[in-house]
Each structure stands twice: as C-alpha cells, then as structure tokens.
Length: 437
Image 1 (cartoon, rainbow, N blue to C red):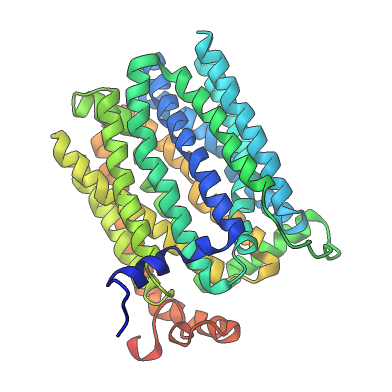
Image 2: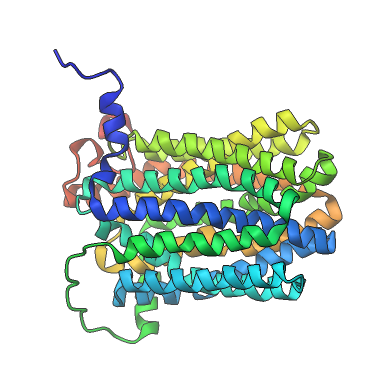
C-alpha cells in the first residue's frame, strides 16, 4: 500500500509543469510582474474615473489600450513564427517597463492628463500585439514534454489570476493612501522579475528558420488554416463573442463600486479581488486535470456560469452578494479562456502556432476594445447594470450555439489526436471518448 498522503498525487499532478526549469523561472518571474500589472490596471481605471467622472471615457481609454492589439496581432503572429520568441519577449517586457515608468513619472509629478493615459495605453496595446502571441507560443519551448502543456497553461492561468486577486486589493489600499502614481511605479519595478527570469533560461539552439514568403502571404495562410478547421474556428469565434459582450464588464466596475453599490476604491478592490478568487479556483481545477478529457463540456459549463453570473450581478445592489457573484464570474471567465487556450495549443500545427495564437490574442484581447467602447457608450445611456446584463445574455446565447455544434467538433478533431498519439482517452476529439459522444 502506498504511504503517500491522499492528496499528494493530485498536488504533484497540479504542479508537474514546474519540474521544467525554464517554465519554473518564467512562472515565478511573471508572477511578480503580474501583480504590478494589476496594480496599474486598477489604478488607471480609477484615475480616469477621478479625472473625468465619465463612463464613456473609461470605455475610450480601454479601447485605446486594446485596439492596437486587434489590428496588429496577426502581423505579430507572423513574426513570432519567423523570429526568436525568447528575444522578442525580452524586448517587449523592457518596453512595457518603460510604459509603466512613464505613467508613474507623469502621475507622481502631478502632470498627468487623460491624453497621457490614452497615448500610453495605446503604446501598451502596441506592445501586447507582439508580446501576447509570443508568450503563448513560447510555452511549448519552456515545457519540453507535450503531455505537460495543458498543466502549464492552467498553472499560468492560476498565476495570472492569483495576481489578479492580490493586485486589485493592494491597489485599492494604495490608491486611497498614496495615489495612483505609486501603483504605476511598483509595476515598472516589477518587470525586472520577468526580465531576469527570461535572461536566466537555458534554451536549446533554435532551428534555422525555413525560407519564408512575404508577410502577407504567411498571414493569409494562417487565416485560411483557422477558417477551414472547424474546431479552431469555433473556439476562436466563441472566445471573440465572449470578449466582445462579456469581458468588458471590468470597464464598468468603478461605476458599480461608486454609484450602484455606494462605495469607493476599497469596494472596487474587493469586487476585482473576488473575481480573482473565482479565477484562481477555476485555474487550480484545470491544473489538477491529467488530460484534456472533458474540456469541451467544461468550456460550455464555464461559459454558461460566466454569462449567468453577469446577469445576476447586474441585479445586485448589496456589496456582499455582488462580491460572491464576482467570484462566479471570474471563475467562469477564466476556465472558459484557459480551456480554449489548451485546446487550441493542442490542435494547432507547430509551424502555424504563432499565427493561431495571434488570432487567439485578437479574439480574447483584441475584441475587448470594441466591447469596452460599446460598454462605455451603453453605460452612459442605459446605465452600468443594464449594459452588463445585456453582455451576460449575449454570452449565454453564444455558449448555447457552441454546445449545439460540440459533437461535430469532436469528430473533426479526432484525427488530430490520433496523429499526435496523445493519451488514448483523448484520441477521439475535444475531450470525449467515442463511447461518451
């Protein structure tokens, strides 16, 4: 009989990607940096609200920070498939550190204006157009064993959302005590962690790049690949819809905290922190899984919880209930996003990984600016609760359509898993064996 504690094998499974040195370095370095990133996100949102008292301006700033990602991510994906991903990440992290340092300078010298915030948000969006697909595609280089890829993605999601849990809570306290500028400064310093982790990695020499056609030809090839393969196309379309309609609820959180619930920065931190708690719980659930078996169904359940949670949250006028519902919203959103990421990374051909993950970036991050702008516009006219309620209903409709198509998507994905020779129980497609279809 084994002497292991009952939960030991589960804990070992949850952390198996950390056995890879390069991923372990990235995990802890990025963890430090992401806390600072969330400080800046919350501080920027509160700063714009304090300067303008405008829902529309909150949406406009979010739009400015995300539209460059939507427009340029496909080109970034082409370059990710051509260039050294490790070097690209070092450059993008240094540039992101400069962006946060400039925000800190203008804020701490009391010269910051909404124009500064708009310009620097657009600069960060430009950086993300190259950083995000490079980061997603680089995971397979840090985790040599493909069987640990899903675990690495889930752990990365848990790290992102642990920072999301801690960052907003700390930001609420810091904003009230010393102002937004200190949050920006801490964020700039925190980038040193991830830059150091990247420089400490030991990577295999990159294979010589194959001869490439023109950038537009490569871009067209990636688009045709995504459009012609139903499972990848469906995953990206659902993710884009959720990002357009559901995810922009975050833009309106200052209005919920201040107007709907009658609070301030501390209430905003509690709401965002609760969303982070739910997201961490969802990420740990994914990290404990040993295969992608059942991920298609889990994606549907998570998306439904996200949409329903948004609808329920829009009706709440009591802070404790709103906090509880934010945990449901955060968990549903994270699991839906991370499950989509895992399935895409598993299904995609290696030579098109950068381009497919750039479309993932467009779907998840790039659609958000349009949703943010619409949320700001609708929030100014219909009110924040009605805007979030509509987003939740649209999300539920999208999930229902995906559920209807799921059996056909499993059948289309089956040959990919058979060819890859992954675990036998997932060789039949998007998370189900043949006898469970």
